[in-house]
Image 1 (cartoon, rainbow, N blue to C red):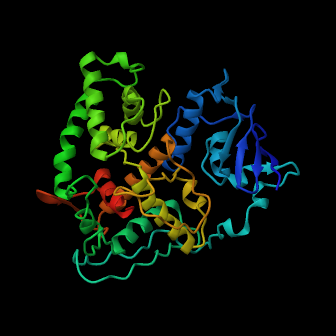
Image 2: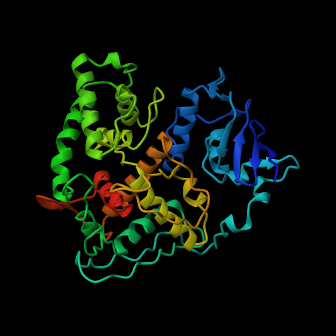
Image 3: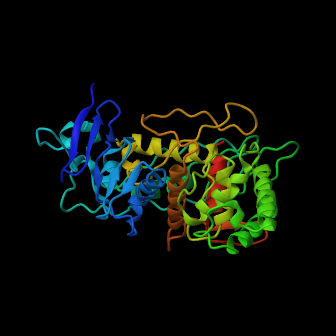
Amino acid sequence: MPTISITHRDDHASGLYDPNTKTIKLLRGSILTIDLSRTPPSNIAGNYRTVRDHVRNGDIRALPDGTLEVVRDIPDLSPSAARVFADGKVGSGWDAWKLSNGELLDSLRPVGAKPAPKPPTCSTSPRLARPGVSLPPSGPALPPAPPPQLPGPAPTPPDIVRALVAWIQADPYRPPGRGYARGWDQRIRTYAYAVRGNPPAWPAVYAHVTPLITNLHALVAAYNWNMVNAATHLNVADRANLLILADQVRKWGGVPRPRAFADAWKVIKSAVLNARYHNAPMNSGWTKIASFATDGAPNAQTIWDSRVSTSVIWRLDRILHANGLTPAAILDHYDLGLVAGRANGAGAARARNYQLAGWPNGYGNWSCHLAGSDLVRDMVTVLNAPNSGFPLMPQPNGNPIPWDVFGVGLVLFMDGY
């Protein structure tokens, strides 16, 4: 089907709607009234970051009156993402765009993708069952847990995140060559990663990464990263140390050496400031460096690689499919993308079959790395909520503690194997 001309309901932006992909191309000359100086709600923070990326890359320019103008067409936006670009507001994009005849874009929305209306007496507060008692980490085969049903006729993204956390708790997991585990606490104890010889097990992980994280944090704390705009803004010793640390993190993760390793400072700055700067690169090596640099910070970032993205997106795919929803139910809140991994070998992610179409490619995409981190931080919040019923995070040498982004990432990494 051909694309269809649309305009924002306030007539200041225009685009082309593709009924085949259900995406919008925001056209050159569109005026955007989004206010990038304000702190947006968390459910559209990823869209704000993407707009800022386009401003930095020259696709969007600032005008004297405080509005923005699209300089180059911006394709492949969901209706809701395009709406945030245009006016910076939360809400359905299907109601924010109109056709040439004055009808809303919602008139073209596939019937199955429209949320059911909320009955006035129905509560949409989360009503997920508490996780069950953990089973031993070995033993006979355990039946898989089905994807959970979401609460209410119009579940929210937080409902979906709570369901994701609860399903990982309930679903038995069998790490390669070992018995079954169930529950977040038993899953983290199965962590290992592929190297030559015996793979380092969970207790050894912290011994390996703690010195790297500590040294990266010391370097990060030494600078105001808003003022770092070139490698030479770091002193000679720190530049050399950063390259050594980045290479050590890369080796820990078992990924190839980047072709532009001198870009490490760009990755650190982008990670610390939670937005892409200086066209900083992103891949399965850089995401690890960004994660280590922000570990423990309020904007702590996950390692959004093939393993973690496979775990998260495959489970979201099954949850949404089981509840009659499309990827838009979560992608309008988190700008997620699937990172393709190696097709074979010890570090390869398991092949997965997806029920739903429309999951974006997240490889090399800072927005996907940051959105995946937003989602993992929200998973941490669910796990640590008072009276949640979820187990605390075990520690190799001490009492269990509340979950953090790094610990959740270890569980997801193994779940994506």
